[in-house]
Length: 281
Image (spheres, rainbow, N blue to C red):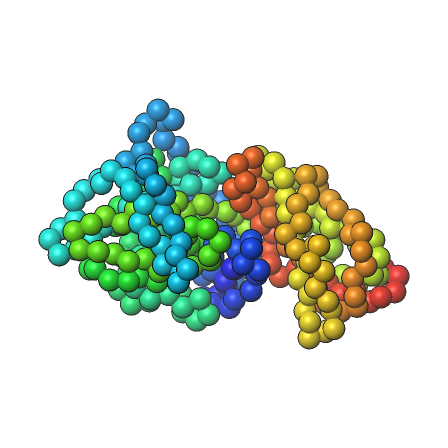
């Protein structure tokens, strides 16, 4: 799920089958390019302190259960710790801000209640110390020096709850950052197109192995969702739709993935176009 806004967040609902995270922007530029503040990575031979014998998992109620690992520090008396890792392109992301939020509202306000903050080290690892036991609604990692955040979740959930227990370290799922600077070349924002042979085209993204695009229908305009064009994998840089779209308004978004199926980047989520049913204009 993608969220944007300053002081408030406005949801763009996506299908759960490909929702991997959540981000919201503190800036007003929806086409903001996220650039890394620190791209140092750990030595490949370094043993990660939070390496898990079993990774964190999602329960049916949205609660993330702790994985297992080696504690960096024992929790203080009556408190718990949270330990995890932040990655970009399957590599450690250093200097990244991570927040544990007592409350998290996806629709308005974002992180709230008691908030605990830490930064990742050169190995991409973080430790949030002295957390009062309880259930927390958000564990989010900032996307480098942008105003975007991504949830640390497991499986197909976009947000989760985290149960912190007294005297124990909660080993969180890895947070995989992705940027929002992939360039969608066609259709262009505001374009009016015929129903047939619509081409979706984008620019190449560094280290991307393949891409996925989705076309979302604004059903209030009588547009109709074509599920073949939701989360459609493409190995190249364009795809000509092999089915016509019903007249109406649509939004198009493209995402880039590396060879390990980790999301690297996505295009802006506000690229809207209209299908007129006639010849392309």
